[in-house]
Image 1 (cartoon, rainbow, N blue to C red):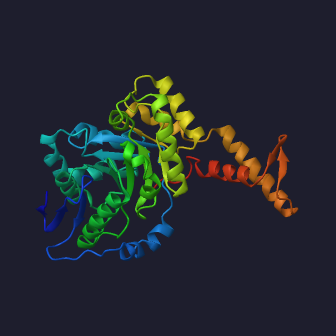
Image 2 (image 1 turned 180 degrees about the horizontal axis):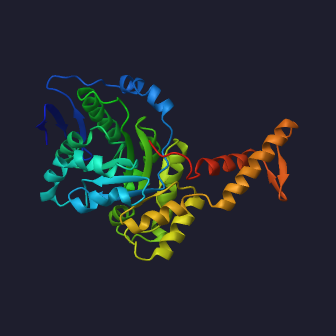
Image 3 (image 1 turned 180 degrees about the vertical axis):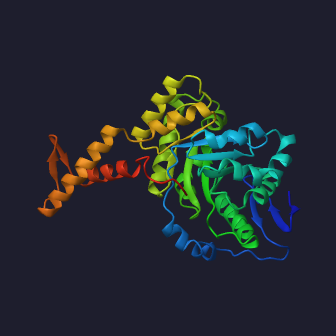
Length: 341
């Protein structure tokens, strides 16, 4: 498929180069730079100045259901994902996009991060980006991400729209959803594909379906850990837990899965039901005991440094640089810290 889809003055050039399809945004006759250096140069300040957000919970809200959109800001999630993809029927997508600007303002009115999940197919993605690259959107959730080239093409399109609309260049970040076994072979490249990348998460239901299995522990442990390692290596947030995202009714099991995910190194999780939000916020936050331990470690480290000591004992256990770093990380995830992208 090739051709143009014209949307409010922007022309999306749609190119089908291979099965994974690429997209760029450009006027007819425009020659897009062959390398990303020009784009990346514009991110230097952004990349250096923007810290990782605290996303313990990201709540999906179907963009076409007004009552869910209206109440999303009351749910207590660190971020709200206004969904244009799977939760929106095909015949409702056009109206969902038309209402997106208003929806963004509504879900973010209490300060939560605002994300928009976009579709994977080219024509739908073009329309989604045209609607979603607006003031108030902090990040896009890229469904079915399968290559670094795909991320770069979307980044180019977003940059064109930001320039056209006089929006801060590079402010909108990307959360990549990994939903196919093929993407697992490219996790490192996807994670470092563009400075807009801020987080990665496995899509357990889609991934399980893609390999012909059920979303259970045995199947999901390895791909989740692969996403975790790739995200941490690239300095991104790893999001998720080992299990089905759809199993929200068993709150005890969900809490156990979330607590285990934090022990493994995950920073938060995506929620499909409001009841999951408080569980994730609690599970991915340090306990009072952990905070007290971390403060004692850092206080003891300060004393040890003054004495010229690199490693020391506390409560009968050795404390060295990795333990000190863990204490600092615990303090950094204190819910008393500010939210934001």
